[in-house]
Image (tube, rainbow, N blue to C red):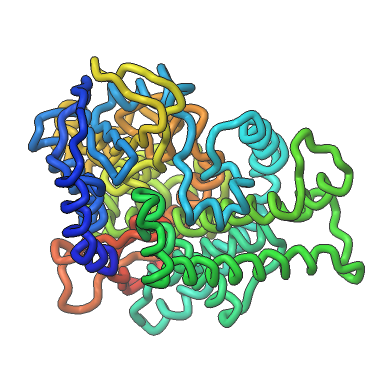
Length: 501
């Protein structure tokens, strides 16, 4: 709203400026796209679009093109909405499109791009990526956190059982957020927060989500950068940075406290590992306190928000499709028997569960527009010339609903993935919720295990129904953007302990 107000004030000045100048323009071979205004380009459209992935999909349909060109102030933007072009961007020409555009928000919050998620491509980023993969998110390291995952799931089931005994309505959105946050806190920081501390944790995630969606005028029209200070955006960003920095510093101080109990190697959390690597100087990268804080930001923001969102979208789809839910419950319960819980060894034996999770990712990816890339050299896409410094969006939401690739694309049909070779690991470009190539999400394996384990146990332990008077077809799927594109309204369900209905 502030951006729109600012533009309404300054647009007349901008137009007068451009009317007073004569400029020679050269036509270049660019993809189609909507008309743009002088100086700000299409910034006003993108800033007020709401569900941006949906707006860009509609534009793609309007221009009948899988590739669009827009201008965000001084920045060219390309949007691709086909599997063929997604493969070009993320695999065939990955090196040309593997950077990230710089932004005021991310530069500040990531300590001058000391992280791996938002940092532009560089030799240091490449070494950092290898470092993370080997030391923090290797298959062995992910497996070492199994006891934490299974313990948190057991605690969640125990809490829901209390409500089930009295047939109380459960806010499953809150439950999913709570377990996702607890998992990240224990795996990354080695501690479990009480309700008061967890509110602080959630506020930090919400603050990050809100500020990361904010358009800073200085990023797109540098000459008008002073507007950011005028409307309070710069001050707000600084306050959020201070909140995050204080949080990470407290965690570091706790881990450095000599009175803290020593942990066995297999019990060490991610921050323990980072501190040890820093102290031993055994890392090929310059691991300092700022880079450690930036990595903590990646882990806690990326891990907590997306897992909770994915869990809720999966449960929403299931409650709207009772026959699918019953079929999945039958698979889980027949496989597990009376063991009492689903553990991680059971997951490979549940093909329909995997199909349901994949179908949920297809219909409602938590990041429908994959994180923006930036071209680092001139290239050709679909016959069009793409210049360096061009921002690139891959609209994975549009691709995963394209009737060219999917039969009945708007329907929830997990069966489409049974006996299918399609997976989520970035090689099938009709389904890339975690991205692909050099910029694929490094936490993909851990995120998938979290979602599968939580959903499997929710369906094994309980039968679920809507509160009295609600029908499956009335459950809304309205979304809201933040760290991830989440269900706007809480999912409220009534649990019944399995075998008691």
